[in-house]
Image (cartoon, rainbow, N blue to C red):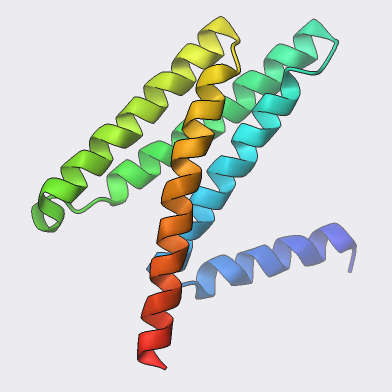
Length: 133
């Protein structure tokens, strides 16, 4: 088996065996990875490749943020769910501005915000696992 096939197989098993909390963490990690790739796109010299790299990675991040919005249970989450929905909407809007204007500052803002949320989520998962053990 080739290395790429092994990596794909590993990723597939990781996703299918992950808990819902771990899946959300994977979404955060993916969004952060795509934003880093978009920011790296600003250093590309070729105009077409630069714009395509920035655009594609921003769109992937926006899709993840929309998925995170859809995962919120508004009937149970109350005020917290509404605030998170609005925060994700703000992030999507910032990324849209970054994509249209080809500016990296909004991407950095969203990366910082999402990184903080990701770290808090990871800490919460660790504590819940420790309580079960």
